[in-house]
Image (cartoon, rainbow, N blue to C red; front, side, top):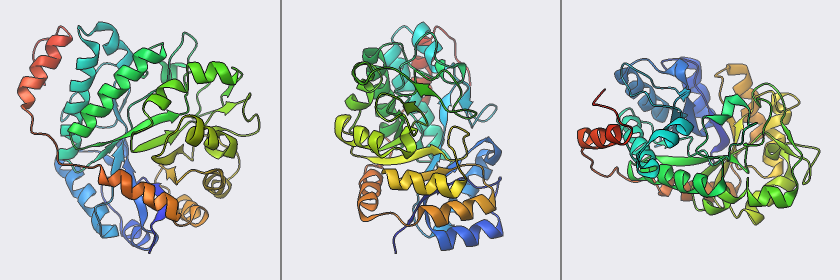
Length: 334
């Protein structure tokens, strides 16, 4: 039986009886965790094991563990990090520091059963990028972003964690927070290709990507990339991204219509999988019904992405922590 074209976020610290039954019947491609799902390492290991048990397979479990403001697993059990843009500015060797950061993050994720991280961010920042995004970026030019994003992806992959490239085809020109409103970008297609799209084209070999809820008016003024067939063709053909494409969270207010319309619209536009994050049972039922099963092409992309999961490279964590702290001019810390 094909899997559901959805990734769901559970409600809390443990899988409920309703969720166990729903996930068994719906069989989502995978799951995504948030701060509401995180308590202790032991609890997280139980949760991830129970989620996989509910679907009877080694389903991917995702998280947003960028470090900085967007970090679901925090102290005292896990390391805290500077915002990425700040780290890039202060590190003695910025690319090595980013690689080490995400290699260490990968080790923490794998330890609790998480094997996909919603990073790297290949969005190019500028002075007017909305604050919700800006210091999560890696740089203000495509060349810097490409190098840093590759270092991030390589660190995650070496640590046995699948990277999710975001936000395709570029969120850096957003002047509003897409969690609350719909950003509209007026830049020409040529300017977009030279700056915003370039990092995603350079990283188009990565296994998974996440869309941007943004309207690019010069290409399709009627719909954000997530639900725009024109933009999905740009992503597949111009940018050349061949991996599994998931939506950003369907609950974000940048999208219009109810969840049924959002999920169906994203799949119709060409997204492989929809992402629903808030854990509300009734909404998950709507999304599952509207997104349907993975198409054969989407299933092939999912299988190819999951085939890139590998056992982590054996690392000396204290030595890498010491090197990382030295690159930031810091002493040892937990």
